[in-house]
Length: 291
Image 1 (cartoon, rainbow, N blue to C red):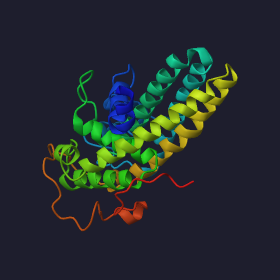
Image 2: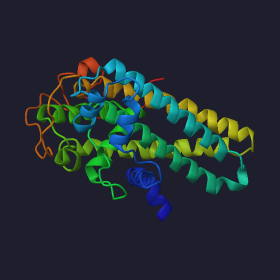
Image 3: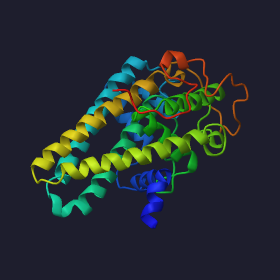
């Protein structure tokens, strides 16, 4: 019965894995430490200081520079997660019950790592401000949407654009809590989580098959991870870089939590920049990425 319930509720399955992955050692990225290290080679000390105190956009750092830094981070995380996935594939079929859950957890952990890095580069606020504490619902909501963007869902693209627009309009330092937990974005968060729960089950089965033969399974597993992780990270990078939140515009980010919602809405998730980013903002139905 319990197993049947899990199958019937992919949203809960995905959310549970996301929460577990967020608790793994080394998954949470220090925004300040990362920005200082990542920008050191390409930005002045004054730009770095302002990027940390406010945002890279407020510091006037160009999207071109940020794209290069983001590319470095994507290559680093891709190489790391692929090597770990290959190592997890070595034991073979007898160790499947142990290696598959572990591989899935570290894969999601690395997706969280690159999502945080890209978010901080493109002027999103600190997602895990309380080191070691439980992530709040708004953080888990926006991370779910980031994962949705990585997997190519149009609804996630549109919802992330909407959240970014709300933050940009109100110069907020924190995520819009109400919109992400019980407002107009929340239903989309739930639908994206359900879609990803189904997707996760299919991918888990594929990884199980790839690990059935020792050594051969290692190569296949590492290659499969590389082939999926890299384009997903690039997809999130492209979307976040194209949002108005990332555009260099020196300003002081002195707002607080955005508790309100945008009242003026000319259609589901319509934004002024939606057409520019290629997102179908009227789509609520989740779609598989076109191949």
